[in-house]
Length: 301
Image 1 (cartoon, helix red, strand yellow):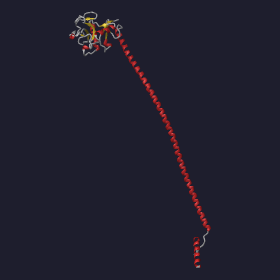
Image 2 (spheres, rainbow, N blue to C red; image 1 turned 30 degrees about the horizontal axis):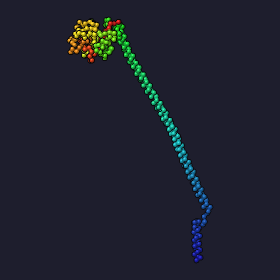
Image 3 (tube, rainbow, N blue to C red; image 1 turned 90 degrees about the vertical axis):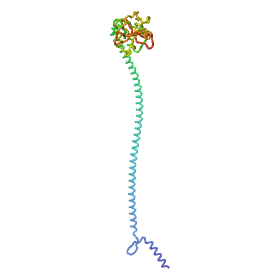
Image 4 (spheres, rainbow, N blue to C red; image 1 turned 30 degrees about the vertical axis):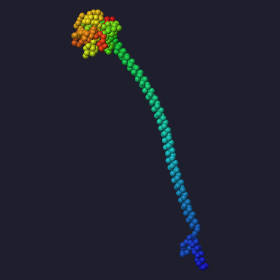
């Protein structure tokens, strides 16, 4: 029994000492604690150094990362400030452009208004120029007429020997009257309807009417009232100076004929290219549609 307990105790002691035995010359021996402590210390030193190195490297990496982040942030901040500055410049430029646009609009409106004013003024000047041009033409015409008549006839009148003649068509080409109104116009001008009493005057009247070319394709529309009528006695033609017409050669062939017995009692002078001596026909003195231009005559100055 004791032997069994002793063996058990010995096994336990052996088991307890087993981790510390050193295999040697066929037996066990306790290790050197100083060597163990030294190894542990060296191991701790290595671990400490490794930890320090890792810490330093981490710190450097972190610092580098922070520096990189700080640099990037600084660049971003700088770019942001630049963009803000540019944005302010853009806003200011936009406002300046708006002000310039408003100014340009205002100047355009002023220029437009000035242009309208100048156009109005120019139109006024143009009208004045046209009026002056017409007046100049009239003055030159009057000068020419005065030179042609040597001042013996009024402007618009034509001189032949000692008489002045007014052909209404020259001054009023669109105005026509009946015989009575035509004579009244001559009287207002200090004259009377023409009295043709010699061959030279007959040719002068025919040539003058021919030069005017009034409705030359329709001969009877180119006539002018003259001072010759047969209102008192049919067929007896009397001038307004009470001289009876005795020369029949100046009437056109077949005239006077009192066509249709309509009372053609007033004489009209026309142009005849074939025969300047046959230039008269009789016409109704007063009827709408039968109005004619007229010829006035008066003694020259």
